[in-house]
Picture 1 (cartoon, helix red, strand yellow):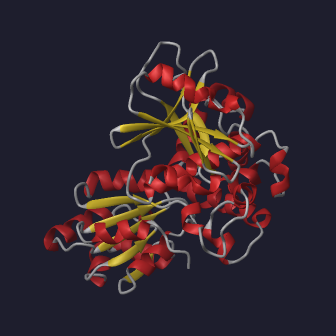
Picture 2: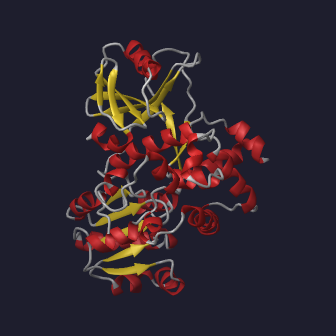
Length: 387
């Protein structure tokens, strides 16, 4: 078993809160993690129809059965249960009593905000990070290998070819998760929508164009993006909130949490295609940003990542708020370093002025260099950038 970085934070919060919730995409390893951290707790899965009916029809009896506490998997399948959990933990106030997992953040968060506010700690678990795979037999030899394979644990555990696994994952995701969140009459159109999103990785999100290409209304495209966000398929990188001038782009950029999933949607069949594919650079950028987000989530922190672009084309791929400083980060797919790779970082230094900022360049090579315009970080050592 690959040691998950979130385990330490999970153990700590279970000593302080009566309820701990872990949300993340389907098959990201939530169940394996909670079972390993809490081996003595009873496990109950609400995907099981009989168990779910018990929880829905007799919530008091259900919680009485698990009076000492339990791991409740796919907890969002029984939303009425949350009120009874609230009453149960208020009576005993025992730390770490219930561990909830869910693959649909929008439902779980809604129920938590209404009933368990102040009683629950919420953590997010994404698929494996490079940091977690380091020094294991699964450690990738190249960025291209990792980008194409993706990071879902089952691919590694069962040695499944990504080309075989992802199409089935996408189909299961649409049939199970999407239908629970949104009443989408034409699931084929939704699948086309996801593929169109994959083709726009790293681009500023244009909902009107996306909707037109998919044959749906602007508001529908906006709603469907929210579905993909809430189920941890995509994330939106917002523009940096401090307005240095009025010529900044103010729309978010679109990325995928898992590049293996994106490669499958783009029809990429092997890692060699990435070097010539039109989305190769964007996929590398998505991978780098996702690794930064995983590092933050695994420590119970929000990403606090943004980007900056003005209307003349000057851009910084990522600006991250860390402690009292800002990290400005450029991402380049190339294995060699050119002087113009630092243009975005130079632009940022002019715009930000005396802001306490540290510039970094993540690239597809192996060397670690300290240059006058920024520190150069290998793709294999992204976590060292923000530790």
